[in-house]
Image (cartoon, rainbow, N blue to C red; front, side, top):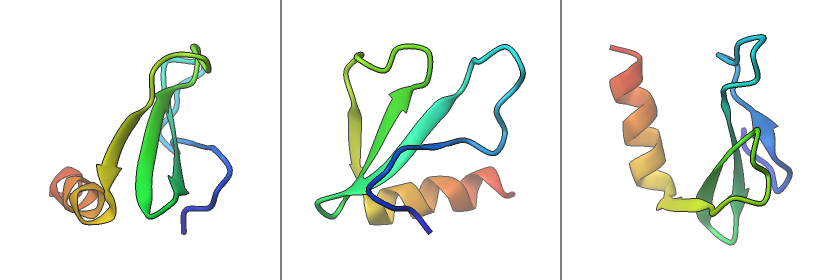
Length: 57
């Protein structure tokens, strides 16, 4: 389950090339782990779950 704190992707590699996600104010926020001050991508929870479902195929 997502929380208000940033969580690193479980598919992160040792080189640090990964993303972090968090649930905030009813939306899912996504950012680049290496660039914590970079812009944040925001999407609906429904779209995020759809993306995860597509990834699992």
